[in-house]
Image 1 (tube, rainbow, N blue to C red):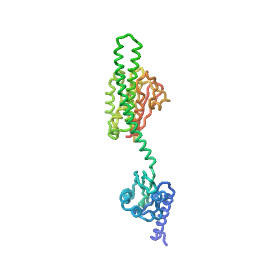
Image 2 (cartoon, rainbow, N blue to C red):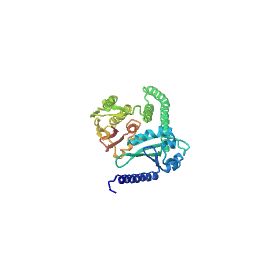
Image 3 (tube, rainbow, N blue to C red):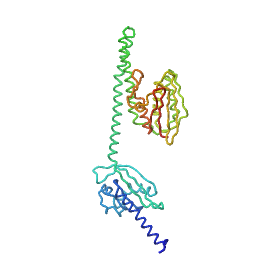
Image 4 (cartoon, one colour):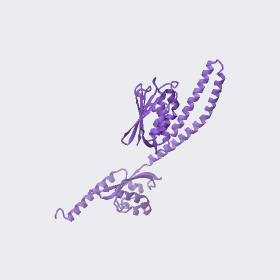
Length: 368
C-alpha cells in the first residue's frame, strides 16, 4: 500500500489522535485537581478520581456520556455550555463561584478553568475542565474582610468617643493658660503647656489613626487622576508651611493614572510635608518627577533635608516608627505608614533611599 494512500493516512491520523488522547488521559488521571476531558459534542472522554468523587459518580456513569445526560439539561445549559462554547472557540476560560457538590456537606468555592486541546493542525478537538477547591482560601478571605470592617468601625467609634474628652481637656487647659498668664508661676505655666501639648498630640494621633483605618477602602479607586492638578492642590494646602520655611517645590510633567484622588493627594501631601518638616539649615528644596517604566509609572520625591541612615530605609514606613525624639519634630509617626497604605491600595510599591544627611529620596511605583 502506498505511503500516501488515503486509508494509510487516515489510519496514521487515528493512531496519532489516540496516542494524544492517551497522553491527555494520563495527565488527567495524575492530577490532584478535579479534571475531565470532553470532546466538542460535550461527551466525556475521561475524568479523574477527584472529579468523580466530588460528584459521587462512577467512571461508567460519566465516560461516553454527555454532560446533559450526567447532570441534566439545566446544569448543562447554565453552567457548562456558556463557558465551554467560548473554550471550543480556542480561548481559555477561568471563573470562580460557589457550587453544591454531593461529596461535601456545604457548597464549595471552586475555581473552574476550561482549556481547549488542539491537534497539530490547530483544530480544537475538545476541552479540559479543571476544578480547584478554593473554599478554605475564600473563607479566610471573607473572615479577613469581616475583621477589617470591624476594625474600621472600631477605629471610627473610638476616635469619635475619644475626641469628646479631648476637647474638654483642651478647653480647660486653655482656661488654665489664660488664668496663669498674668501670674508669675513658671511651674504652673510649664504644667499647663504640657497639658495643651499632650492634647494636641493626641488629637493628631487620633485623626491619623482614623485616616489610616479608612484607607482600607477607596471611594473611587479607578477614576483617572491628573497628578499635576493633585500636586497643585497639595501646594495650596501646604502654602503656610512653604512660605514659613522658604521651601521651593519643583516638578516636571506628571501623568494621569487610575486611582483615588483623595488618597493620592494624601500621598503627595505627606511626602512633601515630610520633606519640609525634616529640613536642614538650608531652605527646603523638593523635586517631584515621574518616569514611565513598562506598565508602571515610577515617581520620585527628592529633598535636601536631614536624611536618614540607610539601615532605616524600610523601618520608616512602620506604624509609629520615629527616628527622632517627639519633642524634636511634631507628628504622630503615621505619615509614611499612610503613604505605604495608599500605594498598596493602588497596587504599587514604595521605598526610600538616603544617607545620614543631606537629603532623602522617596520612590513609589503605580500601575499605568
